[in-house]
Image 1 (cartoon, rainbow over the protein chains, first blue to last red):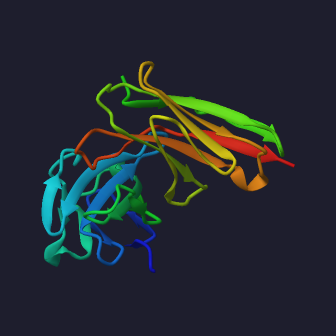
Image 2 (cartoon, chains in turn red, yellow):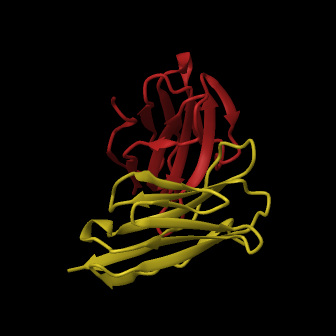
Length: 114
Length: 110
């Protein structure tokens, strides 16, 4: 079974530019999460989708971040305009709606804003 | 105060040694507890869930102390492949959001 995939694996952009990260969850997983780790800090929750609905977006840092999950399959996280402090590793995770609380993480997208 | 605090280490141990470390959590209402393992520049992977009575998975033993709000992980007979960062993770009841510690680095040397 394929795991969670994320694209791109790395992105280097300049301050003020826009970047869109993509996450494909494990097939059949209705729960999808975004997390972020900035340099030297712990991994922090950003938001949680159940199918196409945002269940919890309490971790989104500000309105420069927009997450979507149209159709309830893959998700995108857009940062516009990017700031220096947005640099970090963005992880996506997924889990099934029932049958356990294990979240399976993708390999992450390493974002560098110059 | 951080939600989850861990000793960052590093813990440098020889092969075959036993290594143990703790983490503390601030919210007494926390209900679910996990240890994740993260290799350098890789994604976190679930190592084991932690149950109230304590649990063991091969060479790994996890304990939960609700009264003192800490979780421990013990690794017996360390292998070189155990070198990684171990993340303490908790969540609240009916909440899918995971709260992570910053991780404890373990290096096992030959």
